[in-house]
Length: 404
Length: 236
Image (tube, rainbow over all chains, first blue to last red; front, side, top):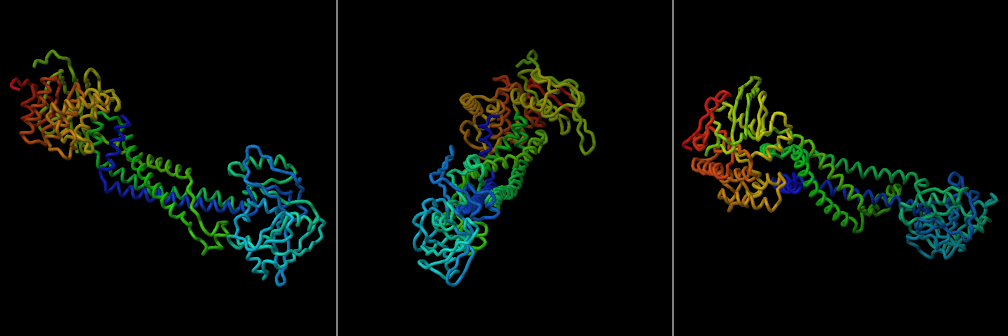
């Protein structure tokens, strides 16, 4: 049977029971739009989680001294040539940053706190959260800057402020404690207080002087394309065979697990929504077939082959689903656009949001591949929903049908 | 029109068919021998349960005999698969049903073109043949109307147009006048006679309507699943 004829019949049958098909289309629109919106929110959550994990001084790939993760201290460090540059063919770098990151104690006139003291080259920290935080006061000028920047929350806890002095105690390369005074250049206001309480930054050269060693404890590397992570890790592993080269997933396993879970959640959500819908679609198709028993009988009688009857029912289902998917995607896209205007403010759940590695404003992210996947799977579901009604249609005995 | 020397279009040999009705066997046809030659206009008549519709359905490949052999245009139907029977119906037969059975979402013209589309006839030829047939049956001015916008008689004309537009070897009509008034029935029968006489369309009609029988050139009467009378209607 010519496809054109099947499509013509299928299309016109869409308008045969306008109200019933409109109700079905509404259900498909709601389901598809719901899946699209939920996907975009989960993708936004995923994106936030990954960006936070990468930006929290991790990078996509990080070079560390062996054992540093188990016992992070200055002894677990390594030397990096001054003129070293990552040489990673096939990988587009967004940036890289060498650092010393060691535990320390910080004291103000009134309070004492345990912190992570991080020696940085400020010009290279475009790849970390420092590039996007709100700064009060001044930033560090260069790698030799002996001042510190601390989090706003830590400043509050230490009851100190910009321009005041702090004392920091940490272990030197020889295993003995070093103590030095630092002036606060500025305070940073991160998204959530976790980072503000944890990190204190100073120039990497200044910190090397303090610990008496021209070493670093890590090099963070951020790539432009996520797909190049593995290639970058592989090449760096070959270049630094005596060091550990770890991906962000290895460094932030909880975030990585949540990332995978989010992928599954998208699929589960799709199955739940479309699974519920498929029964509605199947029911409508069975009703449509039963209403047209005589018509199918006539079609068979005049010479339509059984497989053409199957094709007609399947095509009608697919057409309904096609129109539903187009409308659903459009509605979903408009809803995502609307939600993207400012995002969803989750600041009242700040603690939970921070624990999950998210930002306080959730921005939905619509991926073309998700839209394509939802559309294709919906059409596949449309075909599957039609199989049973098609079987019923093909089982219609033309003789009995015509006698009705 | 003398058809006795024409080729045999339908041949039934010792055809029997038994139905189960609520576990009671009903012998609808009992060892029926029947032939229809090219160009004949045959009415199958008889009371309800006589077997006329069963015979028509078996000739049309819509039902299968329990015993006996059925041939249409030289093709033995008994051994054909469902798909092969569908193809045979599509290529060799035209059907006119009691309740028209037009496709409601298609216009009269599209209904007439429908079977040609199934046959794979090109668009230009389809349009030309449909226009010719619709004009011949006097419904060309209703070509764009859907069945719901046509009267019973007009719908039956469209059904006839659909059945003959493919120039079938055999036109099978099951109670074609059942839903029509006398005047419309006469119009339909005049039309069928014209098709039979001018185009040589072979027609077999199952009916209990004396009007239809009166127009057929050959009357076959059945009772209790057997042919009890097979006569030429010279007056027709």
